[in-house]
Image 1 (cartoon, rainbow, N blue to C red):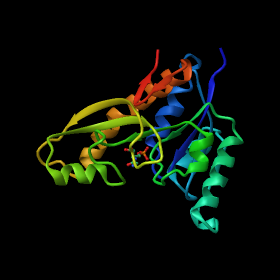
Image 2: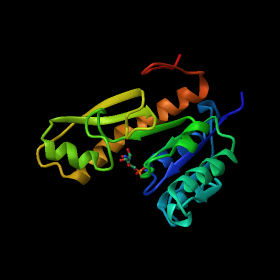
Image 3: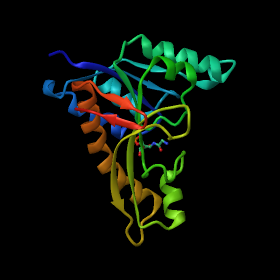
Length: 200
Ligand code: GAR
């Protein structure tokens, strides 16, 4: 069986991307990272893709007259690789209607949604004083981290945790979750009924 092509979007370190690249080295995993897109040049994520021989592209909001035109350009750049779906793995831009109309997008988030959506989920969870947080894999819709949830895992907050220490522990769980979910989505047809995502 041939591997399912995906496009991965990154903004920074790309450790989630690296986990997907590593997993896809096994043909049985069933995923081919066809391209990696970034919203800025010079990210470690892009360097990881290049080191693995994966095509990359950069789509910067600042290079377009409007956010809407950036959105259309991003949708086109993704479409050039004909992915079955897109993975937003630490991509720190809200995707627009053109991209979401043309592509199914899976996002991973460092909190147990619907708690702590947005760009500072780890900091917000610590500031709120919860004792358990975690990570969520979900489909992207027009809202901020509001799409149907695919999978969630809890991570306990420990005394003395900082934003960095907690985020690193979340990312260990998040990488395993993302590799598992992306592989299952690639190998099976999945259905979405209301807010319920079913993967056989
Ligand atoms: C991950 O924890 C991801 O959930 C988060 O950025 C990190 C990327 O890690 N994304 C968001 O907060 C999006 N709202 P990485 O660059 O090491 O892969």
